Image 1 (tube, one colour):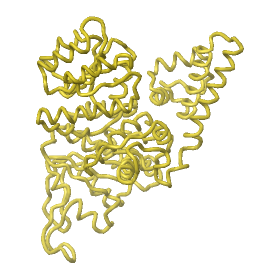
Image 2 (tube, helix red, strand yellow):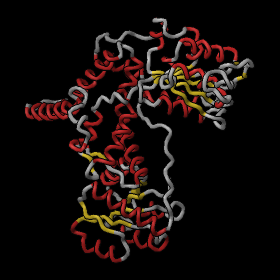
Image 3 (cartoon, one colour):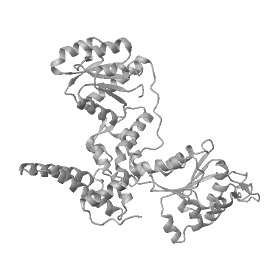
Image 4 (cartoon, rainbow, N blue to C red):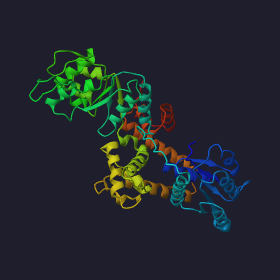
Amino acid sequence: MPRNAVWIVDDDRSIRWVFEKALQREGIPCRLFESATDALAVLAAEPPRVVVSDIRMPGISGITLLERIRAQQPQVPVIIMTAYSDLESAVSAFQGGAFEYLPKPFDVDAAVDLIRKALEESRRNTNEREPDEPMPEMLGQAPAMQEVFRAIGRLSQSHATVLITGESGSGKELVARALHRHSPRAARPFIAINTAAIPRDLLESELFGHERGAFTGAQTARQGRFEQAEGGTLFLDEIGDMPAELQTRLLRVLSDGHFYRVGGMQPIRSNVRVIAATHQDLDQRVRDGLFREDLYHRLNVIRLRLPPLRERAQDIPLLTRHFLQHSARELGVEAKRLSDNALRYIVGLSFPGNVRQLENLCHWLTVMAPGQTVEIDDLPPDLRGAAAPGAASTESDWLVQLDRHADESLLRGERGILDRLSRDFERILITRALQHTGGRRIEAAQLLGLGRNTLTRKVQELGIGETADEEP
């Protein structure tokens, strides 16, 4: 448990649950105790940064806990929670050294703000600078992203060529950098080049270098990216746009490990791991004669498909919070947060620019949104009304309809409502997922966050028609 954890001490499980979810949402680590005795047992070994404690609990009271913490860890701010009837006791606690008291029932956002103030006070008390949280390489809880993370782990000791496919902005270079960082070549250079961004007549020199006098303007010899990446990793982005003549030269390097500079006569040995990426369908480009089939097979040793953001919508809240905090740190301002309505709306957007578009949106909000809490009206004008068809409005509409349907069913005296509606809900989602994936159950299971066996069982239990062709 990190030293900067916030302790929540309350015998009421619901209160502990509310705090846990609210603090997790804000990225604040917390630890939960159902009694002061449990908290005191670990106080010396794992001192907290802030303590939030109920005043009346079985056994040791919050007042006694406050006294013990003040005696052992005087720098730790203690927030005392109390019911309105306990106001006099709370004032006494406040006078006895409590940082603040929090009357019940409380507003969750106000409670989190109070905890943030206490964290700042704790840092001042200990004269410590909170270390910057290490920036994670990649974030994702969606099953498709977990598969990518597992693949990176499996490839951590491999030198194999990797082909990364995925839409623009989905994070292909981040995957390439992670593959390099966790490989035996991590201490050597990582060199990236976007083959689509360099003019055709300069790309050969960029990749392989040139000798002096090789062409007009080549006044000195120059190393290319292959030489710069020696011993490390060369990332070739948008490989699908590489001109045909350079595809031939790249194939030769991958085949025999040698290349020539432009205008050079001496072969140069290359010890480079190649990671390529493309947003295009290379299989189709091979069929169309636009990409060499032999080069395709050389690159396609290991293929990683990076899902677009719309296929991992469950990651959008996590990514949004991360990007807002990152932008705030860069600009030296307090991080903004999205209201529940704004977050639901953003989750419903199609994001053709994928993760890069979401990151840019968060930076825009950090600079342009007027308040600390971002509402739908604070979003850029081009995004308001740009949700995926029916996404934001339909979500609220179907919830309203569900509420009305449940109310009517209860008034009619129906029984087993939860089971019936749950089965209908699962049947619709599974049917749609299978239609979306063309019956491929593994993909559908990943989209739904289920195991394949679980999906197969539910298909049978719910009597879903064979929209799903069995996979081998």
